[in-house]
Length: 438
Image (cartoon, rainbow, N blue to C red; front, side, top):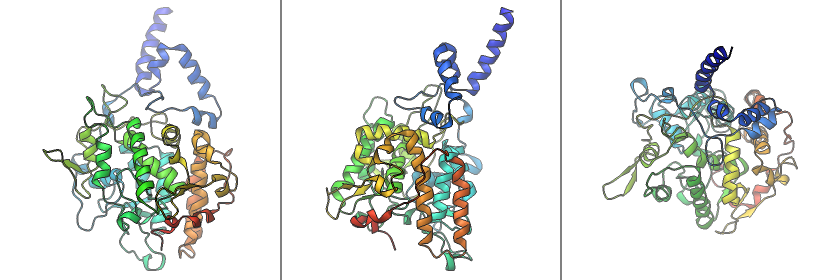
């Protein structure tokens, strides 16, 4: 009987280690297994709060598999963008278009956005789908269900009536935001939010360039988050940090770099983001004398690059981001503040989130992972209708609102507080809130 159990245990061990990143630790630590089973049976909200991803203070990945290799050959070989191809402010999206995981044109169908970011980067569907739907409805073609990773997409049959959206590059304060990791603020660069500002990239690069083993991990990006926020605060009198584009998207742009661009291996199952990988994703080249330069639209997935493992536990989800945001807030508390400068530099004024959300969420909730995930979904459901009603959508408005509810609602925990009264009047005190708007 003992011999049979041992054989069965060995078989289960081999299979489990291949499927579950918790297995190896569970076999060595019975208390950990008990805790994992307890979490498995906990209510949904508690499970979301307690899930951990790789990174400082979180349970690391314990497995690596060759299937994490991303194909950059054949149909997915890198091709430079042509004169009519669109590229924009997000290096990861530009790279997907250059490798054919997105249409090379840079105009992305709604159905492709989330699936490609999950397949290539390990961005969870419950994060990728809301972001893709948001981009389609706020910045894209709501009839054709497409969105642009950069500027305005080509006209379609319905475009003269409904418009084809302004793309991510034209979404200032709606999707794109000030205080980006490498792009410039809208006001400071006459609306150019797509170009890499090399000194800004240099500030990030220098944080690890001389390290014995350079790794642009979350701790490093938190340092850079401090730099980028302070840079906008001290140089841009119209710096504005909106609830969605700022607190959610601009901060996520920083965490996405280590979470989605790190190269995983048997030696580094948690991933490591070295200088060459970072430069490749950001289309940066380095001269012999150390001078950095940027080639617009040439973002590239490196050869022999392995994404994070897939699966509900491993993919980068809103819960993962919420946990990372707690770590950002511990070092850069102002990065979880809605507000902005009031016409002069160094005049950042924060706004009570409770006044914006009708009391549904307070500023302190942004550093509570469970409540932040609720806030993320509920804010999307609350602000998109306001943006849509400001467009000349006519009869298309009902369909767009239905798409929003259909795609986002399945991810929303019923226990989450609903934002029934979203109040955007707070923005009037910040001149930067209107910058870039028609």
